Image (cartoon, one colour):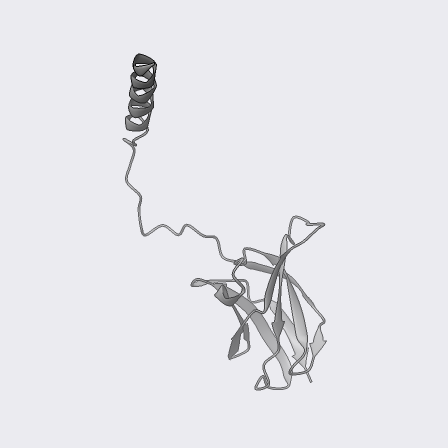
Length: 127
């Protein structure tokens, strides 16, 4: 029994030692996360205090890491969801409450996740 245990321990140890990498070290200047992508915003017309849903991909599962900006006003998302029927451009959604200090008019909406910013070609009309 001791020989079997020793043999298994030896195989396990050799396996662990052989798992090391001899490749190129990690380059910390290369981004490891793609920027988020906003595909659709619903509804298209909102009032301050309304809940807005942003569909796309690349969002954080931690709602507080999703910074949503309306023009020059930023806030954090309230919720994160994985869509039950995803498409190639919509895998996730986040919800956000439109801040009270967002000015009326057409506001560009974008999402930042840990320093990576989404496309900025989406907008919402604020009443």
